[in-house]
Length: 194
Image (tube, rainbow, N blue to C red):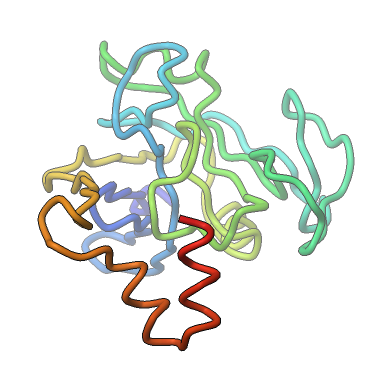
């Protein structure tokens, strides 16, 4: 087990399990929506070197909901709700560098999620989310004492800007023209709305 290690790429939203220099497994993940950081309550994913200190949930069914690291219920695909649930398994981390020393107390985990459709994009509250099938697979492969490295982002994340171009940068109202193209009835409905 000593030759196994984990690497998380915030840029790629991937978790890679290496055995020595060989890539053994790759998982799609979600890191924090707010990016990387170390401050308590920042909802950011810490970066640097970590050690796995605890595995929780062995033997629990996929979709088990954890609160304070205790099973409290069960989630199934299709269940309503937008709450960010910690599901299936927990792999708890502790930081090995001064800036990440608070990671254990911040409750930063690898865990399953009820928002699997968001995997591959930054969408968590700081933890590293995996699909429920992948967290079971990862949980079965790792042991306490194993090293995990979370690489800081090296690419700039894009920022969005929106312009209201109609009648500002162009001489027409685009929505009106789209309505007009659909016929007089639709045009009148668009005109009444706008």
